[in-house]
Image (cartoon, rainbow, N blue to C red; front, side):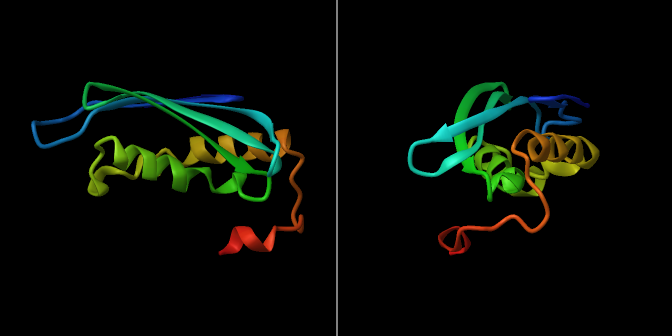
Length: 120
């Protein structure tokens, strides 16, 4: 199950058997200005993975904000979602809505410049 509203995505999955994985995660995000990187988006991933509480916040500069799913997947794996189940991005239509909201909030347009150091 997934529920999207601007600035927030809730994703929940219940284990089907003992070898399966459960999580109940929220992704909150808002425009933030980092003193070094400038305008971007601050994300907070919080909730439960396999019944254990977790919370982690990360910032992505404007030219990287579209790649939030990579960081969310990496964090989920760090907190115990096995790589075979880490496709929390399977809620693709909800991530599409989130991506569009991030794009609008940051006023991102096709052809916007990317900092070369962010490509390394």
